[in-house]
Length: 83
Image 1 (cartoon, helix red, strand yellow):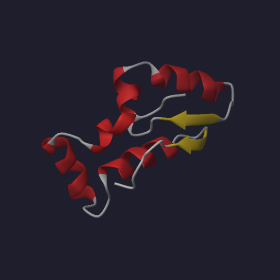
Image 2 (tube, rainbow, N blue to C red):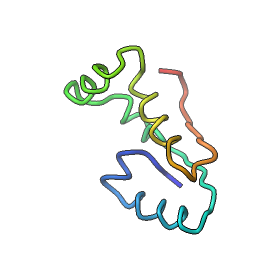
Image 3 (cartoon, rainbow, N blue to C red):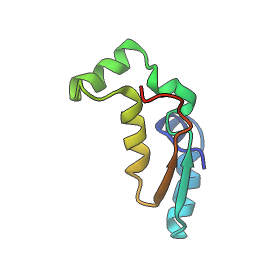
Image 4 (tube, helix red, strand yellow):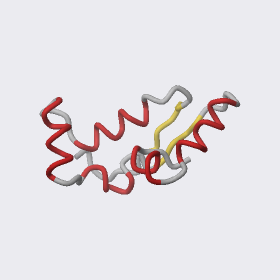
């Protein structure tokens, strides 16, 4: 399934994920950085994450968010670079 914090809060990813979790179905996620959108946040949003840990990239925050879900077994990033 497509799972990232944008789709969780702005689309129906949370609902779909919860169905899979309740059924104890392992989840493979794609688009954890939402096509790069979550690696290119607004200055204000990026500043919040950079204050927490300046060494981590914005993409890494999105990846960790997806991997932190209980049923997630595989993350398919589709990213072309490590940034």
